[in-house]
Amino acid sequence: QIQLVEYGGESVQTGGSLRLSCVASGGTISYYAMGWFRQLPGKEREFVAAVAWRGGSTKHAVNALGRFVVSKDDEKNTAYLQMDNLRPEDTAMYYCARSRSAYDGPASNSRDYRYWGQGTQVTVSS
Picture: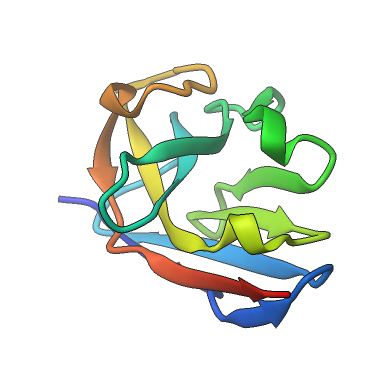
């Protein structure tokens, strides 16, 4: 069974940048869409960005447009989320996920994803 592990979360100041990585093992991401979600304690998980199985098509939440870029490298079995111009409201636990079905496009609904990582904490201070 595939396992996903996120890396790269840390504390930064407003306006800073982070690059999150999602490394897969025990399975492949090559034929699957990859998504990034975030969650605050006591709140529902919300969509951030996703990339289609081929990597050419992406979808971003409105509040991520122009600041975050999602991508995947099938050879490295890794997905990425580049986050620039970070704001305090971006503070959350960030999760990556692999789509349920192969050959999927970039989905924003968490139900379209089957495998999830444990999350990495991003904290943005003002």
